[in-house]
Structure formats: structure tokens, C-alpha cells
Image 1: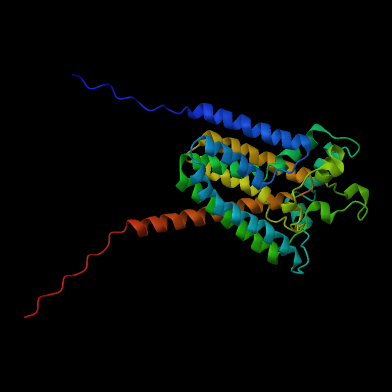
Image 2: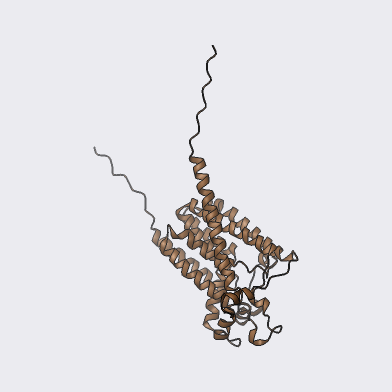
Length: 313
């Protein structure tokens, strides 16, 4: 009598799960932006936890992402204290002008496209890219985590190391962003930089814009401009996506370019802030990858067998 045919387990349909997850996240983040709710890391991680539970990996997600979230919030809390050291913020506008032939790209963009009396499409687009500062690297890290926990850990390690290097810079070498250096009412109107982000939020939501107490009680650091982590986070994600997820990496490169233009237009960063952020990306990725290779060689090195003791005469 022949053996019954072995029943094959149900095969997951990763594309369906991926599309569903993208729609789910887009809906959540879209509603939050529409209703004026700040997209903070804890909301992003909770949304991803739901996907992980649906995939049957909820417990693993908590084990892998819990330490990252704790360290990331620790960095956010410390970043505010970096502004309390008493170091005077540096004015980088001279360096920016030297790079761009005597002009400031922020002023050039704002004079060409910004209308203080209205909300223009470019204001909304720039605000969107600015607000995705936290969600993007976390979502990309989740993609890495789904395919390879080891790759995810390397990416998160590089991200946290880059944040640490940036914190040290903010601590000992603070710098003023364009909106602070060229405040309206302090400098002539023709060289004043609008803080477009705040002005657009006020036009849309006013005082009803929601920031959770967890973040509203943190000390913001208005001198944490150099390097720009807004530009560095998606650039680091592109670096770690390049070898495994080439289409995603190309998309992230385009996203990084859009972020760079957005933060300069909004008056939040100089171009040189972003360029320095890319340098920090290179240092962080190179350091983590070198450490990973060193640890791999050390783990794989064969143990030298001990020499047996000679019998006594």
C-alpha cells in the first residue's frame, strides 16, 4: 500500500504581505499627518509590531527591537542636554557661501518658491519629507529584519553609532541652523530665513497639532544642525540596501536627495550640514562593517589544540 502523499505546508505570499503592509503603514501615517499627530518612533514601532504579530514573529520582534528603541530614546533625551553645555553655536553661513559662490541656497529657494500668506504644494511636500525622519529608517530596518536579522543588526548598529558620533559633535561643536542665524525681525527682511515648517504647521493645525508628552517633555536642541541626521538616516539606509535590495537602494538615494532639498528649503539645515551627514554615514558604516568582519574572523579562527603532556621517564 503506497504511502499517502505528504501534505506541503501553506506557502506565505510575501508580495501580498508586503503590499498589505505598505498600504497599512501608508494609511496610518497618512491619517496621522492629516489629523496633525506627530509621527514619533513609538508609533512606528507599534505599527510594525502588528505586522510582526501577523507574521507570527511578534516575540522575536520585541526581543530584537526593544534594545534599539530604548537606546534610540536615550539618544533623543541626551540630544536635548547637548544644548546646555554653554558652548556658543557656530555660524556656518560663511562656509555655505564659500561653497556656493557667495549665495545661500536656503535664501535662493525661499525667495523663489515660498509664499508666507499661503500654503503651497512644495511646502507640504517638504514638510512630508521632514516628518518622515523617524519612520523611514525604522521601516527600512524592518524590511532588513524580515529577511535577515544579522543584516538588521548591522544596520541598526551603524545607525546608533552614527547618532552617538553626532551627539558628541552637538555636545562640543554646536551650530546654528539658517532659521536661527537669520531670524525674522533680527536681520533685514531680504536676508531673513522663514522657519517654514513651523509656519506651515500653524497654518494647517495651529495649536491642535499633537505631540505626545513623551516628546513634548524632552529638551529640543536647536543647535543640533551639523551634521544633518535628516539627510544621514536615509543615506545610511541606502548604503545597507545597496548589496541586497538594489531597487530599494535607488529609491532611498532619490529620497535622500529630496530630503536634502526639503531641509534646505525649510530653513532647517545648510547644504553643508547634509554633506557632513554623508561623511558620518561613511564613517559609521565602515566602522561597523570592519568590526563585523573582525568578529567573524575571530569566531571562525580554529582553536589551536593543546600539546599533550609528555609521559614521565
